[in-house]
Image (tube, rainbow, N blue to C red; front, side, top):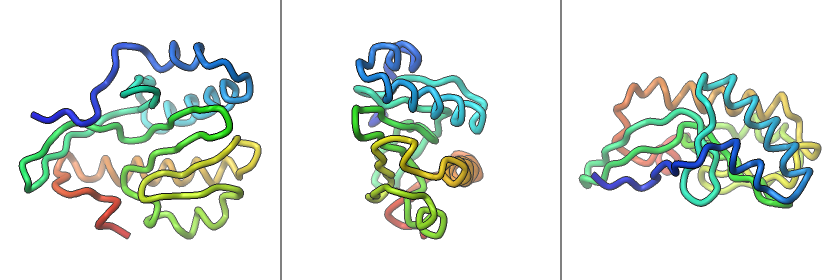
Length: 148
């Protein structure tokens, strides 16, 4: 099995505590509370610095398979990445109301939470989590490349 996104043994809380930027830590703690409440799961560190909540298994027709986070974020000074594993295109109407941000296929980039409408972000994350969980483990394609 190809574990593309392996969980790291470090907890999400330990990683956040190690960040040297006070605003990034504050914003990260808000995101942890939100995503933990939405997912019902504690934060776990994935890869280098991604904080993920909940997981799902995928297996593509190519034979590639692995586990990935359902929702999560990567905190960096001046740039927080929010991961929407179902893709940003599915959320275009809400993203238009979010505030200052940019996007790529499955990432929403913000500088700090004060730049955005937090209740809109929460709605987007809630919808993304609900969609991924509704797949009930039958994810056989890269959703953000194929869904709108």
